[in-house]
Amino acid sequence: RQPSVETFLHAICLHDTEAKFIAHTHPTAVLSILCSKLGAEPLMSHIFPEPIPICGRAPAVISYTDPGYKLAHAVRQSIQEFGDVYGEAPKIMLMINHGLIALGKSSQEALNITRITDKWARIVLGTYGLGEPNFLSSEQVNRFMKRLDEEIRQKQ
Image: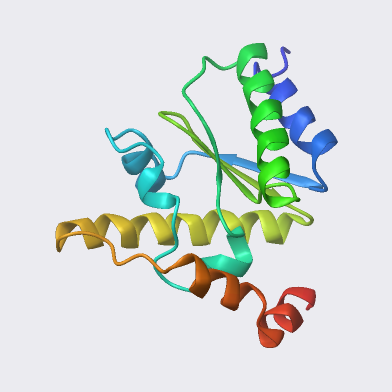
């Protein structure tokens, strides 16, 4: 049996972040966005509060790279750049024309991140059908991240 060509990608995610579980998936709604001319742009800002504490302030984005060593290297670079900007590792990584990586401290957290990102993508797609998304401001996102009830919920 041969290991997946993406074994290095998963190892880097485990080594370079605090994640204990990696959910690398290809949800249809997420790919519908990532394979569009807009790429990850529609998922770079939140449009409703629910994903904020689950997925973090923003996703990390990786331009399309063929799976294998080069993709693993691009993921490592993206994790480092994200950390330089936000002071922490991303919870979601969006790979253009490829898929989603959810980084969780438990299998349940990785699953929850995947599910809410898929919901977020479906809602984004729906808002474009009605004109365009009404994104939350950075101030609104930051305020939500600091809510005491959200801190308590995340700890539970």
